[in-house]
Amino acid sequence: MSANQIAPFPAVVDSLSHDGRGVARVEGKVWFVEGALPGETVIVRPTKIRRSFSLGLVDKIIVQSKNRTKAPCQYFGTCGGCALQHLEHSAQLTFKHQTLLDALVKAGVGPVGVTNPIGAMPWGYRRKARLSVRFVPKKGGILVGFRERNNKYVIPLAECLVIDPSVNSVLATLPSLLHGMSAPDRFPQIEVAVGDNATALVFQHLEPLTTADTYRLEQFARENNLLVYSQSGGSGSVEAIFPAQPVLLDYALPEFSISVGFSPTDFIQVNRLVNQALVGMVIDWLDIGATDSVLDLFCGLGNFSLPAARGAKRVLGVDQSPSLISRARDNAHRNGISNTAFECRDLCSKDLEIWDPGQFSKVIVDPPRSGALEVLNFVNERVKPRFLAYVSCDPATLARDAASLTKSGAYRLVKLGLADMFPHTAHIESVALFHRCEDTVPGTK
Ligand SMILES: C[S@@+](CC[C@H](N)C(=O)[O-])C[C@H]1O[C@@H](n2cnc3c(N)ncnc32)[C@H](O)[C@@H]1O
Image (cartoon, rainbow, N blue to C red; front, side, top):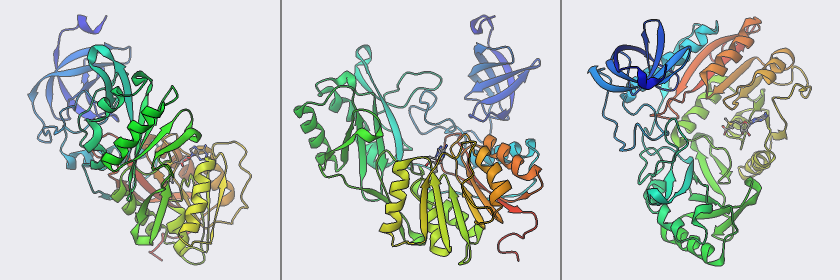
């Protein structure tokens, strides 16, 4: 049976799915209902029927949640960027808190209390983004924005309330800028990166730029006080257009008197103030002292390694990306830090015989969404740190990895914290502190 053969029907929503849809159970079948909130009774319009679950949209709200709020963004509901603007911000945090706990409990880890969420800047926080560009003559030409929810179309954005104001202020002008280029249909993406010192836009292009194109981009950069780059292929093909001599972006970690330099295509944590607090919390929880050797896995630019090095005897940072490792070394130098080393390695490899057992007393792990199972097994069996802080952007892989650490009996989860890194989206950033069972919790000795 197809979705349009089923008439809209009433349903009571009991929870939110991991991607922010209302979950309702009707006649034994699970429905994921876009736009619905827990506690609401809604009329569901079916959109997709699957064997084990079905998808629908809210046609009408019969009983409204007290946590429902009017989404301030004009594109909310269509744009794929935010999923939770219709839920009060404090209720978003409650949802994330509960999702995190549920994932851990389901994996047999815990129970443990969650500390108050680190939060700041619920709007205008996003300092890294990839804007999609499409040339669609029947929709007026160039469209610049995020992907729509549930499909590959681009929603043209005249504004974005979560992106940094320096990018928001030029969003509406990007289509006309590209319309004036020699091959306007050959720009698939604009990557934006915001440092404390400047904002950079990287224009990906599939045809070589003409002199007139370069001049046009240069003028745009001057008029809007931006750094502008071109990118013809992979990240190694990024070239500065204005200023001609590339300017390193940077962000500060003031608590540690550290300035982190980065290039516009490098990974950085999306939310400046939340990152500052997150780094502070990890270093504080690990209670790093002058006798500690710290291993920072998935270290990137040294976002945690460099602050850790301020207090530790020494720090080793490891990441797969040669360019990030090179920048991490530069960042140590830039900050006058000499007790760090950085190594380039694939931490998902099965062959991780790389560090001497017992060498590191404290470990930081900050993997991508896929988690860190392979390297955690190695850490658990060979490195055996007393304390391990796991920074996670996906509760499901955190729970899986936490279970592998704790089920062996070697580690215990002692602290759990939520960081409101991505307000109004369903993404959940958290930190979990584990300690080796024969040891005590930092600060409680
Ligand atoms: C969530 S980012 C964290 C970066 C850094 N800790 C920070 O706070 O900015 C994840 C990092 O994992 C690295 N990475 C991804 N897959 C990897 C792998 N298989 N082995 C080693 N590093 C990897 C990426 O290059 C990226 O720097």
